[in-house]
Image (cartoon, rainbow, N blue to C red):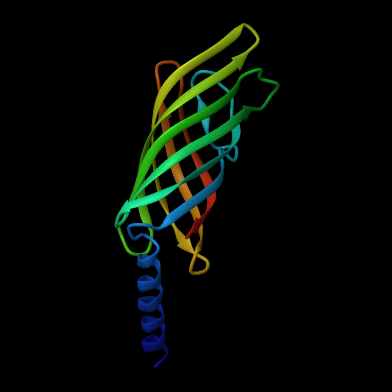
Length: 161
């Protein structure tokens, strides 16, 4: 009997999660990136950053997102990174597994001058529903451009409206 009740609860949660990935819904996704796990080939330092994504589902399971973020390097590095971009996510399952891709403009502020580059990023993650509209979203990401490559882990919250 307990197994049957658990199965019914999982099915209800799956149906509720699917409703959040429908056309016309909105998403807001603030997150903390790095957490000491990302590493840049440009600065040879570990970084910590914050970012926010927001957008709308244009189709079922497909979201278009605007991206803004910043990261700071530790160990006294003088290189900070600021980012603006546009991307998307595709949710593979009703329970929240997703892949994302984006194009961003990155700007470094350094003592010898500033650099601006276009980068391409990808991410894979899972939207774990804490409630009907709030998710915990751990993900791995990879960003790359001519001068800069970064692989890391981030944890965020998703708010689905």
